[in-house]
Amino acid sequence: MANAQQGATRAAEPAGYTIRKRKNSRWWEVLDPSGELVCLTVYRRGAKEVVRRLAA
Image (cartoon, rainbow, N blue to C red):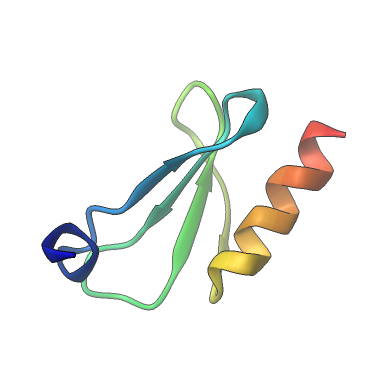
């Protein structure tokens, strides 16, 4: 729980995309396999949907 509060949350997603919460922010990042930013979302659910659509 301490990691989530510090913004170090990372979740492995299909097709190599990564969802990460920005530190001290409400924004969620979607990163491609090379680590480049694809998009920012306010909600984690939105980030998951972006990854789902990209992987389709």
